[in-house]
View 1 (tube, helix red, strand yellow):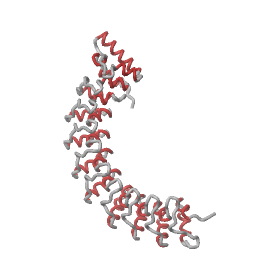
View 2 (spheres, helix red, strand yellow; view 1 turned 60 degrees about the vertical axis):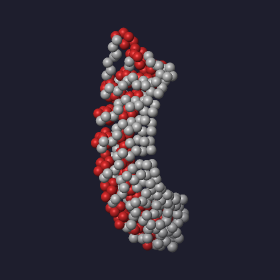
View 3 (cartoon, rainbow, N blue to C red; view 1 turned 135 degrees about the vertical axis):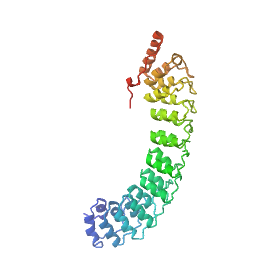
View 4 (cartoon, rainbow, N blue to C red; view 1 turned 120 degrees about the vertical axis):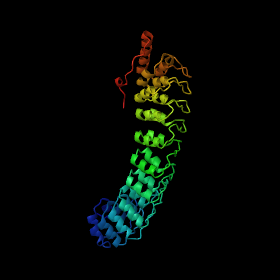
Length: 379
């Protein structure tokens, strides 16, 4: 059987490899030969953290800046895997400390994944560029936020990184933090003058993003910054539309109590109540919006009332809460009443419910009392 040092290294059998490296000429070892992945022996030693093998390879003059098929040098791999001892050994040689891989990652940017601040400080001391950016223009601050690391975020802010820098998706670190629901990092960025009026490619503001993340605490923080709670995105949707779609009664209440327009219409004339009714299991949102006096007689571009949308989606809670005889008999622009829509979409339970409500109203003149707790809501 042929002696294959690369196979041995890939399997992590460094004790065997070390014996061979004591006499590389005898075993005819090409230190810089690569395998199908472009890995050399030093790549494997650095990635897997074998200090003894790394030291032997360096003594035998293995190339320290050799790259694998992803453009990664041994230093990049060691930093990514948090191999502190390997990094120190490599930094004693003439390594490219700002070498970037095919994604534009450098040793310092990959070190963020390791969570080791001392490693990052060592790289900076050795000349790592803190203003480096990936191919999608993520700064070290973006990457620290993405890693959810409050220590790194604070450190790089103190190093002077721009808190409002944009990546290729026009996202700032604050936008990433809000989207990910990282409350503590949001606090840090706001305290350091991050722009809270930034909007994304959909024309959504930070309140939209906080509502999307279902994060009440971040919503409260943004309100304390006096952010515009009625800002409309490219589809005309406000944060309240998003909260209604998400069935989040706490955020709905918070927004309305802070001057969100409860009947604001989007470009298709959907109000938040329409948005909630359109989703089958949004019972809490419907109940909250009705309690907060949302107008049940608003109509979409197609002439749909919230009752029409509830019937079409199969939302039983909404149908019970929104039912009115005049709405039940009203046709939209396609000529459909709510019960006709329910039949069209094969919402059999809704058809039955609408007929029962109609009969009850005719007989007693009183709509059945609705108890939200009595209606099962699918999670």
